Length: 210
Image (cartoon, rainbow, N blue to C red; front, side):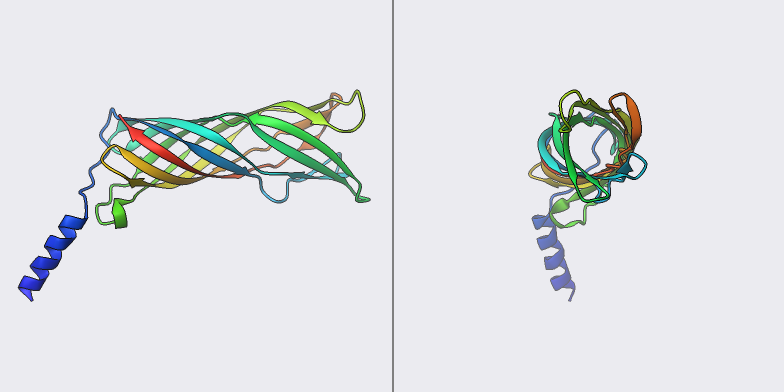
């Protein structure tokens, strides 16, 4: 039994790579793509006269993270502009189409767990921070001369994910974020309410540490 235990321990050691903490002072860059998936019920506008539906979109993203302590990093997420089609539905069922683009830079404080007994040495992480979303190129198809304006939004953001390492400095990342995005909306300069977008953001990325 002792021999079998020693053989099993040796085999396990040979098939697993030791996982070390990410040291303070390390930089990492993650390049990939994310899908912004707004919540299904985006609220109403014009005192409940129009319900709102915002569709999803996928765009390339990049993030940089600096580790201020072992396994603790500060990350900034950036992307090229996301595009969303918007459908406004009146109480009688008639619809008005609109669209917008936005950029959602997000700053997070993150903790990377240092487990050496996970399958494939997967390293989970969690984070919390703040999202700033700026909207632009808004358009509403309601005849000429109508101006749609969506205000910028600031809210909390949460982040969870796993890194699957290729080697000591490179890994494949799968992650998900929640962003509290609820901007005010104006039509022709008049406030008509707010839209509760609050999406989940799902992504994959290649991560390189320096």
